[in-house]
Image (cartoon, rainbow, N blue to C red; front, side, top):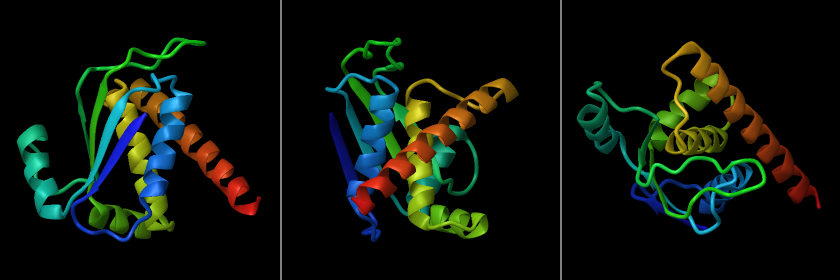
Length: 156
C-alpha cells in the first residue's frame, strides 16, 4: 500500500497518524494492498480555490476527495482491484475550528476527515438521507475501532 502525505502547510502533525488510519480503513474495506493514495494538507486559500473550482461552493471546506480509478470496496473475503485510489485534500485550519466546536483534539478531527475522504474515494456519498446514514455510521465505526486499537497499542 502506498500512502503519501504532502504537508504543504507545515502543519504540526505526525504523518504516522494519517497513514495509520488510512491503512486501517483501506484494510477494513478490503482494498487491494497495492493501492495508491495521496493525502495533501493545504491552507484555506488553496482549499477555497479547489472548493470553488470543483464544487462551485464558496470558501474553504474541511476535506475534498478526488478519485482516480473509481475503486470500490472488495467483496466479502476478497480485495478490490489494484489501482490508484486518488487524493484526499485536508485543510488543517478548518479542521482545528471544527475540532474546537466539537470538543475534541484537532488530530482526531483530521483522522475523522481522512476516514471520510477515503469513503468518498470508495464511492460512498451523503447526498441522500439513507446514503448519509450508511456512510456516517460506517465512518463512525471505522474511526472508533481504529482509535480503540491505537489506545491498546500505546498501552502495550
